Length: 313
Image (cartoon, rainbow, N blue to C red; front, side, top):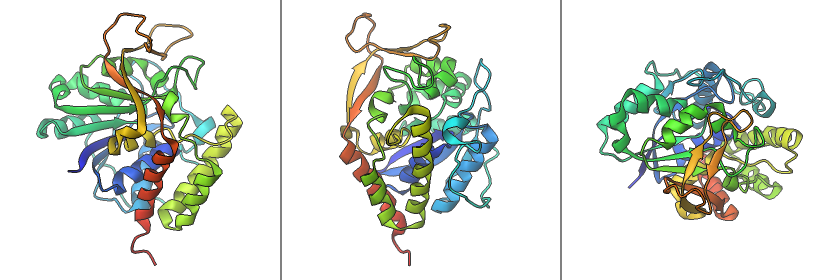
C-alpha cells in the first residue's frame, strides 16, 4: 500500500527535490503540499511550490499556504543559500496553478481528522504550521501516523549550535517534540552525508528529462552557494532525505533517543540536545537519524526522477 504523506515545506532547492520525489515514487501518495515562511517569505515559497508542481505535472495536489512568520520571534530568511527568490538558478515561467484558499494548518487538521490514522506529516522547513495545527486541534495528535521532519542534529549550521529549520522557530519545534506524536528527526548528522557529488550530478543529467534537467540546475546553484557559505565541496540535499525515509527507512541509521530543543539560550537558541549517551536520564521521545547509506539514498532519488522521462519524446 502507498504511504500517505503531506509535505510541509519552504522551497528551497532541496525542498523542490523532495516534492518531485514524493510525487513520482510509486510507494507514496502525496496528498497535499503546505508552505511556510523559511528559506524565503511565504508568498515566495508558495509560488515556488506551485512552479515545482507545474514542471512536474502534479496539478492535482493542493498547495496550501500557511504561517508567514514564527510563533514568537521575528522572521529571518536564508537568501545567502537559496537566493532572493528562495529557489534561484533555474528560470521557470509563472505557474498557471493557483494555491488553495484553505490555511495549511486547517488543511492538515481536516485531512488528519478524516483519516484512519494513516497520514505521515513530512515537514522540511520551520515547524510553525505543524505546531499551529496541534494547538488548534489537539485531537489530531493520535491521528498522526508519524512526523518525519528535516531539522536539528547534534551540531548546527545556521549558528554554531542550531540547524536552520529548528532555529527559525524553536518554540514551534518544542510544541512538536512534546506533542506525543511519533517523531523522526532527520538532522544534519544524516543529511550532511547526502552529498550531490560530481558522479551523482552526472547520473542526474544523464536522465535527460525536463524534471531531471531542472534538478541538475537546482544543484548547480545550490553547490555554488554551499561552497561559498559553508565551504562544502558538494552540496547536501537535506530535505529529500525525509521523503526517502518514508520510502525506505532502512537506508538510515536511526536510534530512539531523548531530544529536547533550547528556546531560551542567548547563544544556543534552536539547539537540539540529542542525548546519545543517556546522560540526562530523560526517557527517549523520538527517533533520530545519525547516518545514512549514500549509495542507496541516491539510487532511490535518481530512480524516481527517471520516472518523469517515461513517455517523453
